[in-house]
Length: 304
Image 1 (tube, rainbow, N blue to C red):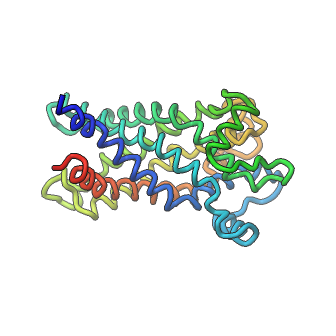
Image 2 (image 1 turned 120 degrees about the vertical axis):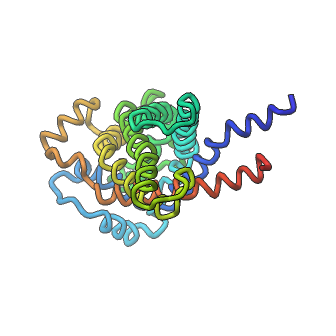
């Protein structure tokens, strides 16, 4: 069947574009992501001490461990995006395209966009959680006393050792809050981006074609979606990080109630500045790079 390769290439397009743009974005913002994780784990590893800011976290790491230390866990981050990011963005675009086709090509309602985002996010998390566990542990390792450090060499060493030393089940530590985080990130980022892009294109920038929004429209929509994704997902991201680090909590309910009792309600948004500075640029890079990568894919692979 001569059309099979081309058909496969068409189906693979949103996944390749999503994974490539996600890996590029993660490479750019990795130091901020590392700072965010360390802020989330700081109180469990340093009880009683005041929390530092994310700039102080990065500065201290460079001073004590060298510049390359701020890229600890990069291999896990890239593998996570190769699996989770590819599925998250690819499935969202695939679901949205199919839903719009069934809607006679008309724009989808915001509720349907959110549903598509949450569905694709939850599926992607189930695929990518093992790499998330490896990422959190590699990023937090040098915070621990020397005797307690795991010393993973790379993402594959981390995955193999978790299975050998702790069992396969621990590769899915923090799965429930991670699923909730994935759903809220996709709903907050991709769904809100689509909605904000439509609204800004029509009512603010007056773009001639809402399917071809101007650069200012895309930038403003990216900033909006970065904020909504950060605000909605940070509490679940905090719980995920605490559970995946192998800390003292027995589960998500124990973690949530303990944090609420000992650290207060607002602690669920610990590191919001770092998280927003990670999520907003990450979203902007993904959404802004998707189009040129998409064009390149059409030219090189689809030969259009």
